[in-house]
Length: 242
Ligand SMILES: Nc1ncnc2c1ncn2[C@@H]1O[C@H](COP(=O)(O)OP(=O)(O)OP(=O)(O)O)[C@@H](O)[C@H]1O
Image (cartoon, rainbow, N blue to C red; front, top):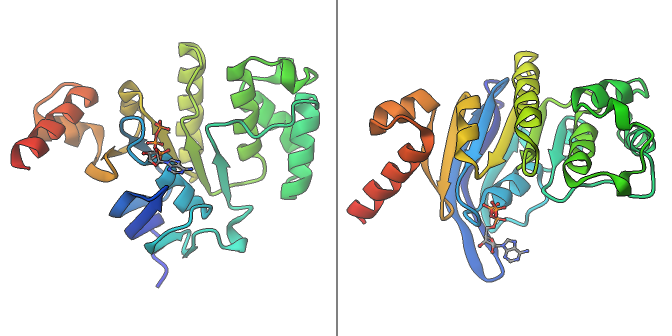
């Protein structure tokens, strides 16, 4: 049965990579029209989980349902935007040409190109060749691609890495605005101070969830003032009971 309240439902997901079990059977839900932060240390399995949500990860067992369909279903292609850590851009095109190309591939209207350029703050770089942009600018071109059309779910793998504080703030405002329009966002980060921007947090460690809570619930549960301290408190508790 399709549960319309959830954009994503993961049940007992097991993923093995390179002979190791990276996700040993995780379950989670992501509500529609929310910003969910997927936080955890480097190598804990965030990208692997996101890959499973967009349907590009081979899974050993379990189910991943996205917008009521199996992850990776063809019908989801224009409904899900995905930004990987490595920007997906063509270096020899200008920013506008690159976005026009992806708009055509996705069947998005050509007028979307100017909108997404504005949303990621690259309107002044529209005619720059992508290969000559800085790393942060290239990452924003990649993000702009995911905003083309009208995606209902945005899966963003560390979209703010390498960006300056002003840009990071602007992007988080954009994420909140998109969620206000009903878009669901899953944003991974290993920077805990970004957690406060999320309505919901999935805290991950070594392939398992330590918590699925709002930032304030986390603070209450642990008695800590910030999410980083709360995360460490949960790690300590887990180790004490191990
Ligand atoms: N292509 C691969 N082949 C084998 N193992 C892999 C591969 N990619 C990732 N892994 C392993 O899977 C585990 C989880 O990696 P993943 O990229 O999901 O972590 P992450 O939490 O996203 O890390 P980061 O924050 O550094 O991006 C790591 O131990 C990693 O070494």
